[in-house]
Image (cartoon, rainbow, N blue to C red; front, top):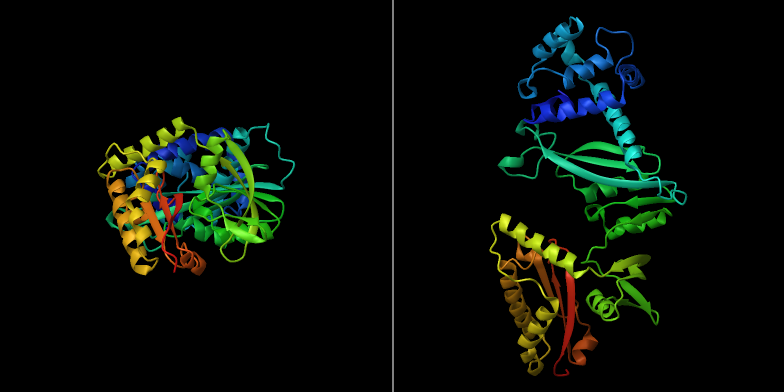
Length: 412
């Protein structure tokens, strides 16, 4: 059995099929559907069962899709079209060409939907293509776990991930593929990077983004537009040296000067640097509070303890600075770094348990860095500087707001 038939055992498929059937009949008539069947090779000569009748047999069935059998379909064809065909002959129609036939119909429908929804005011002249990609997933019967492995656990032994990409300019469907759920979006991005051509704009969410992918897109003389992962280091060039940008301090400065939005040229990459441009926008207080409300609501649903705490980064910074002020009398060595880190981790774990930080685990909710090679150079140690870096996720797990500060200790 091919995936399209097996997927029909999903409990709510009948409802979805009716919606799809309506869209198909609204946008494609019987003649067009039969033409697609011949174009794809699904129907190669005049047969008992036409492409339209095959599609109609599956989507407009009077039977419950969950209990659907080949014999039911045989009876339906006889009653509806007077077509006498055995259940074995129907089963033989479910081939790779049937999959191509279905996918082609879906692509035609999706293209029409894209072109109808597209805003005509968008200027398309600069780019050859505007590639927009995303994925969705849903569970399958456990019997399909050999082909479409899920994330694990009893409730998701089998799960499918559908990759969908289209060109906003032409409406063409560039990707409509079925994959096991455990093939992540970042993997797909790497496997399909060679499909991107020069002068194309690539728009994707963070799930597809790695620094290496962005570098490859630039090398192809293409463009990208996506959110900037808050845990990513960005650098600016000063006096011939790459200096890490402190976004927390930058945003404080923007608020102080009442700057709501700014563009900045930066350099990305840990080893090999490449130039990029970012747009920085200060989140209005009402939207910030709304995000915090959603975080707390999500925490309640996951049965985590939620207090009245709302992350105030100024408060966290001042609290950590004051509570770690004792280090100024200590040597700037590994023992002191470990004690400072443990103290801050305990404090942030408490905030996380109160629901003030986002993430299923403390590791996803925050991080603490202090020490040689992480936040300090040998020169820092010689000059008595202990640099501390803290990342906290208030809205989404693993998307961190970064705090950085220093203590002046004894010089080595």
